[in-house]
Image (cartoon, rainbow, N blue to C red):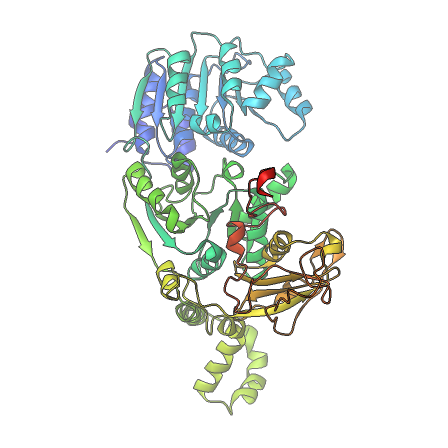
Length: 598
């Protein structure tokens, strides 16, 4: 069995890592450390995130640093400030038994002045994000003339983030005799080009199949209608009482929306994205590490550098465009010897991506069914009962109150007491999921009629804005969708100058007036209330028409059915999936007729 002591590391380093509980090196450490210690060869190391890459390059590099020469001897480039900070902390821990080796993290999003002052005082190791490193080079604050080691950590991520030009600038400033160590989870073509241009006959080692996913991660997917994506997410995470993970979204706005909806629904969630300042980001990360929040909603860019080893789940609210990004996402769980689950929520048109991911990761993706409302309530109740059974109360603290409590409860049977307790704890959930629909796509298809349209019941509402507020169907649907915890269909929409009526698919437990109570439209506070049933308009060709298309009597414009049978309700999908952004989205465009045709 390979041990750290058999790899050639000196006693000071061995003592430090022994205090951390490190005994057996990971595969990437066992292969990389001897190569870096015993030679000056360049190295390409392919391994998943969370396999111990920092120690793989950090331990041998610390041993080869010359403490008496207080100048930058090693440059470690990292894609994010969080990862740069984490690497610096790890190096300080690994080297605490060695003669003073100074390291500094330099990164954007923080004042450059203290970083320049630290460089002037003298350091041995610089851990930097590419953009800040280039800035310091141009200011003359970072001298790379004596660099002996260059580490490109998560090189594929740096290239995905657009740092290729910065990497070229930095590497051109370093001595050609340096030892270049490139660590990456995937071997993208850009990585091969960097190796060809800036590395000399590099050795290549790979832990696991190239570009493959971690063997400690189970891959699952749920297939639902796109409009049901949030509701499916809510049920999936609610089924896991100990859920602790990252939920990946495509956009910053989506991260904020999902985090807000989850918080309203009682889940400990928060968002992390590029809109946060460094102090705000640190506050969210501290809460996540302390498990005061257990759901981090993040974009790919914002999640890079998050170093948490015990995540139970990663959820792809939407699949990434690049297959390699999925490998990075799923690699956030199943780390440090733990197992994890990577979940993807897809719709039918995305199924081909699952097949492609199976080929890339060389792992099978298991199709799961979104739990029903009854299953969800049962799991949550059993979880509560298990917690009660495990609880060991301090009888001395409770003793003064027990006589009074027994007095109050003596007349109740065990069954009655249990029922009251569960009702008190789960009343809202039981009401919400009493008649909750099956969200699985196969079940949705079965609810369709012979013409392919779903049999949907609509609820009519009235809102206090209209055409005078520049309201149109797209903006109305976008406004409502922003506040909904799930995607619902729209029926008829009737817009008047100062108010509008619309139909929304019926959903048990939905309180739309409450959800919209704090919303506004271009500064106008919104009031939404249930309305009388909207009747399909009966057009009288003899009656004069208003210029906006509605009858002059109503002063409004009907955007719904074109006849009295309500054949073609104005569904949100007519404007595409997601939130409509402007009034032109989804409208049909017709070519202008020639003059002769008019």
